[in-house]
Structures are given as C-alpha cells and as structure tokens.
Length: 456
Ligand code: NAP
Image 1 (spheres, protein in one colour):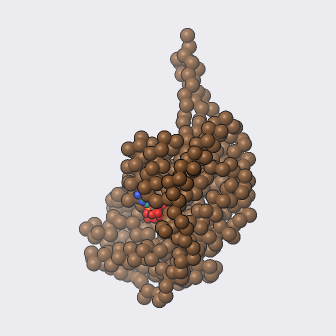
Image 2 (tube, rainbow, N blue to C red):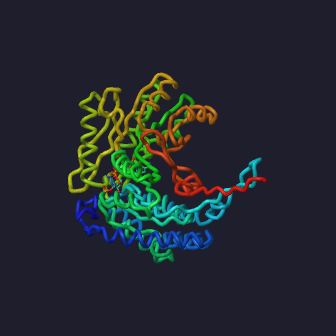
Image 3 (cartoon, rainbow, N blue to C red):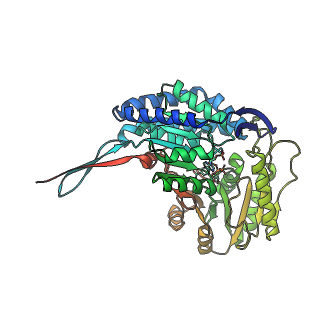
C-alpha cells in the first residue's frame, strides 16, 4: 500500500489507503469523458453557479480541511487555515470571472469575419504535490471546471486524506460525478491515463524528476502538458532598501510552511556593507522561531512533511558544509519521532559547491555576499531554476528595473512570495512551463477554436 497518512509531528501512521486499480481508472475515464461530452452542450453559467457552491462548502468545512492537511503533511494548523481561505477565494474568483474569461474573442482581419471561441478539450490528469494539499488541486480544478474539462487527480502519496476529503466535498456541493475524481494510482497507471485518447492533457506540480517523467509520457502521447516545478528563488536587497521592511519579511519568506514552498526565498543576496547586519537579523529571528507542535498556534515552524524529506535536507546541509559552506546558524536536532528540522543558515557557498544549484526544501537559508547590484543580478540568474524572486528597494522604479533583468516567472517587490487568484503563477527554465491561476491559468487546456468566413 503506497498511500498513507503519517502524522509528521509524531511519525505515527494514522491511516492507509488501498491503491486504485486499472478498473478504477477505466471507470473514472469513462465517467469523465461522458461528462466532458455533456458539458460541451451546457452553458458556463451553470458550472459557475456550482463552483460558487463549492467555494461556500470550502468555507463551511474549513476546520476539517485544515486539520486533514496538518495530519497529512504536518503544516501549522494556522497556515492550513490560511490555505483554505485562499482556496475558497480562488474557487470563488473563477465562479465570478468564468463567463467573462470564456467569452468569444473577435479578431480583426481584412480578409473576412473571424473570431475564436474557447472550448473544452477533455479529461485532464492532475498530478499534485503535498506541500499545499488543497491549494495545488484548486489551482487546476477551478479553472478547468469552468472550461468544462473534468479532472482525474493523482495526489501525492503522503496526503491521501486531504485529497479524498476535497474530492468528496466537490461532489457533495453539487458537482456532477466525474468533475473531480481522486484516484490512488501508481505511476504506471498515471502513464496509462496520459496515453488514453479520452485524456487531453496533464498538469504536474512537483520535482524536476517527476515533471520530466510525466512530460516524457505526455510527449510520447502528443498530449499538452504544463509543469510547475521547483525553485531556488533569490531575495535581493538593493542599496536603497528599507531595512525595517527587510527585517519584517525576510525570516518568514524562508520559514513559512517550514520552508517547503517552491517560491520560498532560498538565496538571500546582500551587498557587502550590509551583510553582517543581515546575518544578525536572520540569526536573531531564527533563534526565536519556535519549532514544534503544528496544532499549537504559538508554533512558528512545523515539522517537515516526511522522514525522507528530513533525511534529504540533512544530507544536503552536510554536503554543503563538506563542500566548503559555513554553518553560520543551527541548533541541535530535536529529540523525538517527529520530522523536525531546526532553522539553519549557510554562507560561503561557492559555485563549485554541489549545493549551489540545488533546491533545499526546508528551513535552510543560504546567504550570499556581493559587491554590486550587477553581481547580485548575475548571481540571481546563475541558476537552472527561474520560478520567483524578491527585490527590496524603497524606489519602485529601481526595483522594477532590476526585476526585469531577472530570468524568472514572478518577481515580488518589497514582499515575500505571494499567490492570489488573479496573479499568474509559474516559471521558466527548469522551474517548468505554463501558468496557473488568473485568466492565463484558465487558458492552459482550452481549445481556442477559430471560426472564419472569408469576404467574397
Ligand atoms: P514529486 O516527487 O515530483 O511529487 C509530486 C507529484 O508527482 C506527486 O503526486 C508524486 O506522486 C508524483 N510523481 C512523481 N513522479 C511521478 C511519476 N514518474 N509518474 C507519475 N507521478 C509522479 O515532488 P515533491 O518533491 O514531492 O514536491 C516538491 C517539489 O514540488 C519541490 O521541488 C517544489 O518546489 C515543487 N513545487 C512547485 C510548485 C510550483 O508551482 N512551481 C508548487 C509546489 C511545489 P508520489 O507522491 O506518489 O510520489
């Protein structure tokens, strides 16, 4: 059995789930495909009304959804509650904007009458990660519901409780059978689904390894894919930064969700004259951050999602130090069965350090000293990733000029990373391709169907 809820605070296995079979997949494909055909003939407004009911149901089941996420992958209950609120907003956003986003688009052509209509394409397979168990699913479910693309969900094997709870809630709120089918399938069945002619595309959020495997199947099957992968986001502090703001934002930009966010600030880039001051700020905040019980509202840093995540991160820190990095701040490991990881600061990571171009998925901050803004920009860009990036400057024009020079999908000015329904989310380079959220996210698996009548 692969799918299980193991509570990261205690290491206890709370529930195991039987794997879905090839027959389960076939049933889901049949139901999803039939729904796709039905939805081709029904107006967007009908789905928008149901979607609003789903948003309301998310709000009504907030505590249940939040607790399921905390038990599955250990996040702070307070952060899980915030995630539920955001998800309700995303679902509501698509319920309200859906009809507008799906409207016909006239085209100017001297050759005749032309416009395109946005149409659904079929069942979409969604492969999602554990770090935001609800949000990752909602990001693809809500826009595709509006479009009329049913979803088959393959969620991470460590968050089955959250996955099933949400899938049940969608149906209870009034969505038709097949709109979102959660299946506890293995990788082979994911590949089988991608190759099935009833499936129009696949989206994956996760690692480069998982992304490459799924994109390979999609390529072979000639299916469209979108990939939301890892990041090694820079946090650049320019010479005119407001240091009160830097102090308020920097620690949380690394520690939120125990540092397990694709857009966490992972590389802090600081000018030489402010470097020592910044290290002191980070050390002070990290030493005050309380690591512990995710259900306790006074806890700041939750345990990591799994034993293997804890072991992998420790190995990366050890590798960094063996490669010449300085461990500027850490504390003794916490005793017990929970998958804790103490906030850690690394410096002196040189280009030849094996960790230089690796994402560290946990509360480990890498701090780099640079002598100029040009050097800061070059360092930020010297990464195989290009997901997000943060810039601090009290001059907005200055910040925007620097932002435009970073090879990344998203830049945040004078704030840590952010995600809102109306802001497109996604990256470049090895951080993936395609966008989720906003109108761009809704277009991911749409057929922009041209209808043209030439002038005679
Ligand atoms: P992962 O191992 O790639 O897992 C993500 C999902 O892919 C899981 O459901 C996993 O299933 C599945 N999967 C992996 N290999 C597969 C294969 N060959 N065939 C079918 N499914 C496969 O990723 P992770 O390490 O758990 O997640 C963390 C990563 O996600 C980080 O790198 C993070 O930065 C990235 N992330 C990116 C974004 C973004 O929007 N760009 C957002 C959040 C997270 P199992 O659980 O069963 O292995």
